[in-house]
Image (cartoon, rainbow, N blue to C red; front, top):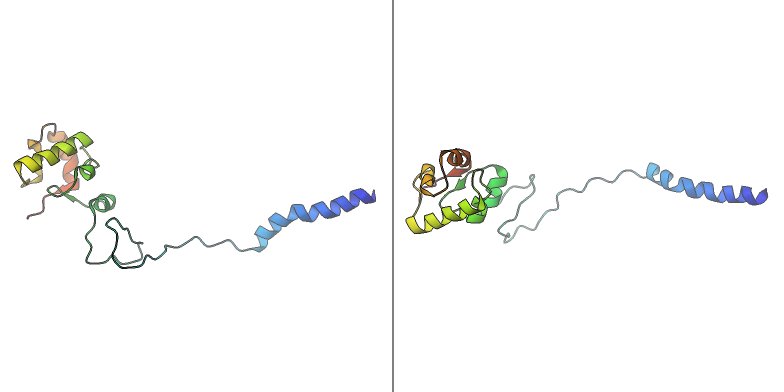
Length: 134
């Protein structure tokens, strides 16, 4: 009997140690946004929401898409244009090829000159694209 009592006296504190430790210790705070040294920033660097964006760095095309801002049709790369609603990877490559061979687009509606882009695709893509004057 003494052997069992000694076993209980040893095992009960061991079993209660983990729940008791979590109850006594406060919950850790979620990690905040680590500050990145502001020097020469990488091209696709995204700052924390609470930190101001450096004024000398324009947003990359991928960042513009994530924020819901419009892309410049004449400067966007094919890889980025592929994520515009209504365009696919093949159509984005066709847009870049057409832009290189025929010159700048004067209006977003000029996108119809690319084979495979009709009224339906143009209507989907129009909200995400803009033509910035040179």
